[in-house]
Image (cartoon, rainbow, N blue to C red):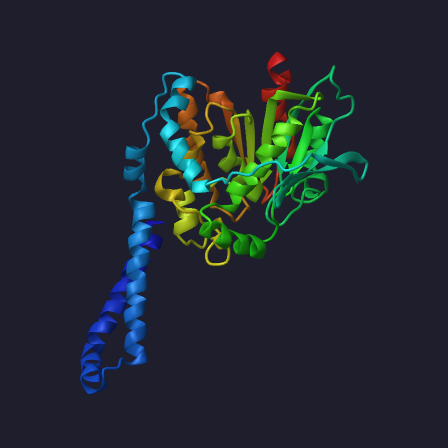
Length: 381
């Protein structure tokens, strides 16, 4: 990785040499007609771009550890003490997402929505000019007398609320949760790279972010859904795949009603993913500009962000064939994340499922984890 990081520095030096060799030509051109040749201008601008890139990459990657050490002042004497000690960081994380104020402007609308054999509902809540929409489904037998826990099932960027009910990379994990006795709330978030790029540009101009907007939409839905007499409002989990994994990581620090989380196909060595190109994994840049948020890497690499989720149970799922990350780096980032739980003496509350597959959800492990922490059957056996 270090070789990859220093390559730009050598490239910058090449540009400086080019500038030196062309300096005489630049002087002559300037004396004759106050113009600059395209070759000189290009070399000069390339060199400046590389200076800027090296400066910012050094800040984001090389200086991260020292900067983050000063930004965090964690107290591991108890779970409550940890939560109090990271309150300033939580506020700064909220500034990164900058969720807007949205107000309910009408009643929740419900429509029957069949998904194969699953009898679900499509729900829609007006929020002024916006609306929060989702699929809501209950397991058989759910009632006021037999309340059930609920899982927020969040689809990724290439998917829809129907995807977690279908075969493929999601392996019908919403069905798996229903079969295990969970209700599922599947919010509709904006699909496709191009659409998210487009909207994120406007969001930045407005001082917010698309994940911040979608968080508030979810929170308004939770206000109503958790009041449903069939739902045990104290037992709420979230399980997201791909960009839904991002939502799980991003939203749990700001939504305390979510008591347990599963992150599939997202967790990463974040500084490398965002700022260090490497042939061993894919990069968001330059195509997916929607994934870059103001201030994210000031102090919120994935293992630091996990300390805003602790002490709540968290499972990370990653496939060795998933090119979003180089899997040994995921292990390294997870080991740092686990320290927060180890220091609280609750290391059993965080798990890494490193599997041999790709960009996908691992249903049995995720259902087991949610069952253990929200229903408790594993701990009773």
